[in-house]
Amino acid sequence: MDVKELTYKEALRQALKEEMTTDESVILLGEDIGEYGGACGITLGLIEEFGKERVMDTPASESAIVGCGIGAAMAGMRPVCELASMDQAAMAFGELLNSASRSFYLSGGTVKVPMVIMIPSGFGKGVSQNGQSLESIFAQIPGLKVIAPSTPAQAKGMLKAAIRDDNPVILLENRSLMNMKGPVPETDSYILRLGKSYIEREGKDLTLVSWGASLVNAIEAADYLADENIDVAVINPMTLRPMFMDQIFDSVKETGRLLIVHDGNKTGGIGAEISARVAEGDCFDYLEAPIARLGGLDVPIPYNRNLESVITPQKEDIIQAVYSVLGLN
Image (cartoon, rainbow, N blue to C red; front, side, top):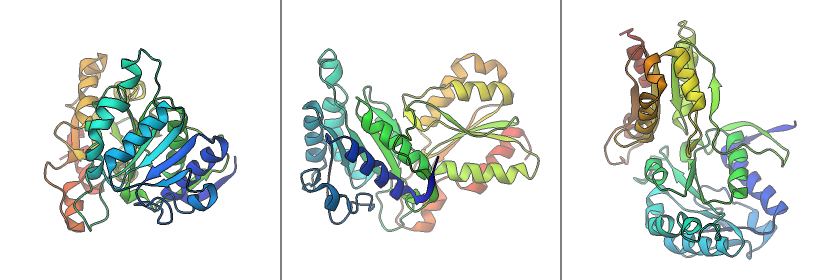
């Protein structure tokens, strides 16, 4: 399979381009997504290729963007709505909760809502206070799927799968990953299945579960610990709803220890859901230490870049947490 080095946002753009070329029902909606390329520059150049009828600049109204997307999806289109930030996505919460997620159920399965809502999340800009990671809120809504790719290749494969899915999908595009480079398959048939967890690194001493931008720090921490003869398995669920736990269960049964790391607030975070599922199942009898969670601090988002790194788990924090779970400090 031919591969090419692309940034995370270039991989997302390639996925959009391939799907729009293949399927004329795929359209884009969002604020400044035309000439400006959207909040993260993902859609740059697509309006020249596909025209204003398929790449539509909208007013600065998140509820209108998502509401129009829902209507278009019900009418047979496959809209991709790009919002400017996680904070602004809250303005469309009513449409997501009451229409996008429920229409299939309320119609007895006769009305499908095949749409994607792309939401910048996480930290890394240091210029604003709108870098929240609220994935747990969206993951609590039945009827929505929530995905969080961590690499350029994952970004392309997951976005293509989301566009082809017949359900509304929230794609969390982390700001700090936008310029990350990595190998991306060039073929337009490259698609990653939603709902499948991925084993990023094998290990026998401890299972580390992470996703999004925090996965990058988790893998770096695991590589560092390998030099100290500590063998950490790293698992990336990637699909936060619905999350299939088989790979996590199997790994925990082998290692007997579990550490969950994520940027979102620790209180009420998805890490708590993973922890509960492991504790409720037959994995509990295999645990040799208490389950540990390392999440974002429960504080408002700071304005300063240095403070951003304090409130989210860094490589050093993960290393210390692994030591603690293993009883080495």
